[in-house]
Structures are given as C-alpha cells and as structure tokens.
Amino acid sequence: MQKPTIPPCSLHAKVGVVAGWPPLTSVNEAGVAEGLDIDIARLVFERANMCVEFIRLPSAARSFAQLTKGVVDVVLMVSYTFKRKQWGHFSVPYRKERMRLFALNRQSQPVLSLISLLSTGATVGLSIGSYYGEEVKALARNERFSGQFIGISTIQRRIELLNKQRVDFIIEDEIIGNYLSQRWSDKPIYRWSYPIHDNEVHFLLRKEKFNESHRLRINNEIEALRPRIQAMVERYRQPHNTQ
Image 1 (cartoon, rainbow, N blue to C red):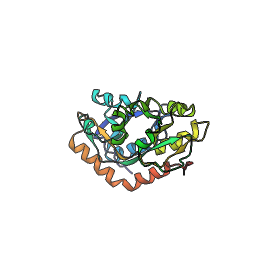
Image 2 (tube, rainbow, N blue to C red):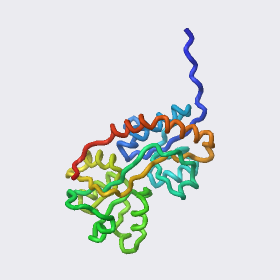
Image 3 (spheres, one colour):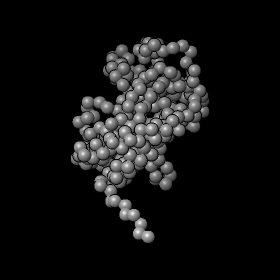
Image 4 (cartoon, rainbow, N blue to C red):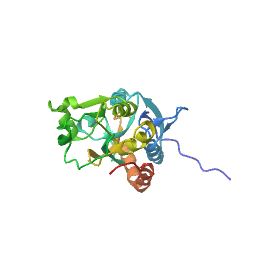
C-alpha cells in the first residue's frame, strides 16, 4: 500500500530562542530548544505547513536587532508596542502573560499602586529590554523613581541579587518566577498579587520573510488551536507560596 505523501513545507523560518527563560524558552545540554512557547511555536507553524529552525539568541535585548538583520525570522513572546510594529508583522496573540512582583517577604497588605511601593524606597530588578506595561514605563522615566529600577540581564542574576537583598523586588512572568524561584533560590521567594502587567503576547514575523498570506495562515492556526494552547499553558503553571 502506497504511503500518503507529505506536502513539502511552504516556508522555512528561523525562530529566535532566548535560552534563559525556562520553563517558557530554554536550550538543553544537547542544544535542543524546549519550553512552553517553543511547544506552541512548533505546533502552530507545523499546522501552518511551515518548517522552523530554532536559533539561540544571546539575550532578550538583542532579539529585535537579530530580527531586523535577518539572523532570525520570528521572535517569540512579544508584547505589542507601536515601535515594534515597525520591525515586523504581529500575529494575533497566542497566550497571555502575567507580570508579578516577587520578594523575599510575604505580602502583608494590599498594594494599591506601584508608585506607593516605590515611595517607600523599594528597588525593583527588571530584565533589560523587556516591556512591563505603561505603568512601569512611565515610572522608570520619572526622575524621582528611575534610580529604583535596576536592569539585570538574566533571571539567574535577578534571583541572586534578590537573595542578597541588593534589590527588594523582581518582576517576572508568573510562570517563570514560580518555576525558577523554587529551583534557584536558597530562600523562599513569594509572589505578590499586584497585577504589574497582564498582557497578550504574539509572534513577531520578519516582514521580508512573511507576507500577508503567511500571517493570515498563522493567525488562523492560532485561533483554531486556542483550546489546546490554553491547556498547554495550564500544565505549565506551578503552585507557589503566596497570600
């Protein structure tokens, strides 16, 4: 019996991977990309009949430069901003991220605003090149508070400086913070409930590689796969000490 023929890929694309964000994106010892957003990308692009190769990127801050240079064709987990729209085509959102504060002490009372927390002199460690929403963006530009936001290149280093009490808080995606603080910290780290930024993330597609037809095909597959993607996201959520 003749085997059914598998149609060739309609497009080959290089997907950038920032290795230091497990369990969302990482690269194992064998050099294989893995994690939630890797799994989602594999699923969506395979369903769209596109072949992808995962390329390790040095940092989140370098992702967009590598996209515009054509080193990679796709950047994962991209929050929408008007500036970034100039660099590529946004897919429809494929999942939501939830940015939260993490600290060595439990939350003892509700946080009404980030400015009220900063007014106590608290310092906050951030990922260089990441977007945390308009509230953080505005406060980081405010001369009164700008020195309290500390850019730290890797989450390992952010957790280390939190443990050493060099910063009072770090801001992380809820899934990443829950996962890594349990594995890399020698002290309990607690997630605070204040919603720093609840946000949808997208694939950012290099304009020279993807035309409108490609983008629509990717969008259609994301929409069709939403229940399956949401189930994948829920499997990656980890319980954590919080009040």
